[in-house]
Image (cartoon, rainbow over all chains, first blue to last red; front, side):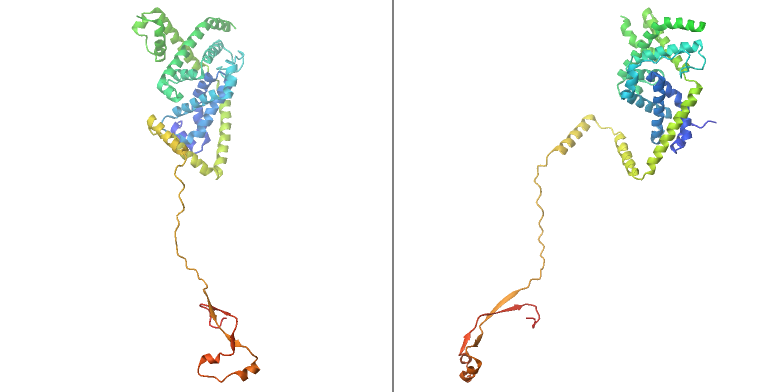
Length: 201
Length: 201
């Protein structure tokens, strides 16, 4: 039977690194997914998500079980994202390259398996479209959309976490959806063509 | 009167809340199409979330890298913990953090007024003159050597001692006669020291 989060947290607070790594294995995918949609490239997503875990490790002693571990971790994630937005490191990579298009047959984190099946290629193209559409938003709007759509947070929760008004969050999320809808519908024809080509290949 | 432009903002909220299209909007073809398109957009992005997850091989490397970083962070922390100099600094830091993080509901106006008052008090030049030092009179006994000058007229013999015997008249009963033939000599200064031994000087 797998140990509960509380057990792992107690052990991790008592300097048990294995317990903390077990917690990381439980939640790393969710954090990485947020980071990959936020950062727009795999390397940044990996760096940023690992930075979140390092910050969580350093702050773990202050965790008081007032909220769930994931809620606490998500707060750290949002702060890390927002501070990265302000850092020159992120601007340097983020503004110059919206999307880093990988060769279709390359081994990337986005691919499910090593073989480039038609579904994988289609998903990859779709993912690049989505990420490209999100790249046109401001980092705050993008983060608001991800938290609302992927994390299911309420507007008030997002506003509190991002230190802005609920109205601003609503506007950002709405803009994100409209952008995505426009981009995906415009690309549908091209994507469908590529999909059919990929299936033939 | 239905306005599609105004309804668009509402549509995004409805889509995010996974609500059904209200009757007044479903009667409008444009709104219905838009609603379905937005729904499809969100479905696609949600599906991407599941399908673009990195492969298992990627996660093995990811967690190995993370474990290494955590190990370094732990080593760094234990190194800092072992230095006794940092212990009081850490304690002060924790206290300060607790102080600043503690949320006490204070009205904005009261808080602003308090800050202004403290600021004015801090920068106001001191108007009162500096207080003069308090003088305390304490009688102190100091041993003082008291001197007293006593002047006495002493007579000496005017003639040599050989002649003197001849001229000396026989002693009479009156003292004044006995001093004839004597001349007052120079003043002799006698110093009497009070408290001294009788034969000291």
